[in-house]
Length: 164
Image 1 (cartoon, one colour):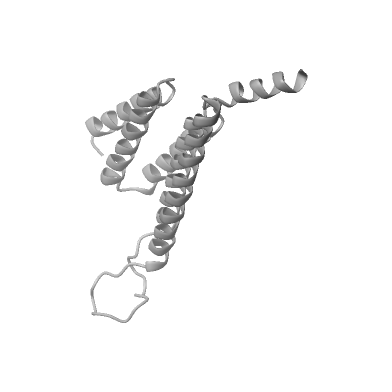
Image 2 (cartoon, rainbow, N blue to C red):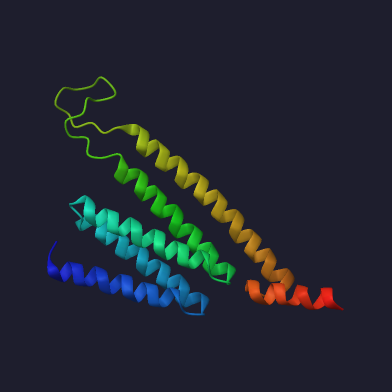
């Protein structure tokens, strides 16, 4: 990987992380988009497993950080980032298909890939999308009922009603 490409990817990850830490929903959304584009760029230029492992670790770290925030919107984005990191982990663990016997009898000499990791990832993507849609609807309903998406404000209101 060229130095310029590595600097660009690092800059994108840094800007995306900065945007994720902001309080505006639009900035958080742009931060998520920037980080996902940086991850896609890294996957395109990564030739070694080390870069992929670093990317997976970074995604799990950012996702865990977002899950530990008090805003339910950031928790939702943390769930999305962790599910993408888990999918990438499954794909990277499948390894290179070179030197393996094809699972299905086919043309000789044609490069074949093990379909099991791809099937698992496709299933995980569909399940993750369903759970994400459910969480978005729960978040929307929470906002309509409570007028907040912050867990600290939500539980502070409940504490004051219990004391009276």
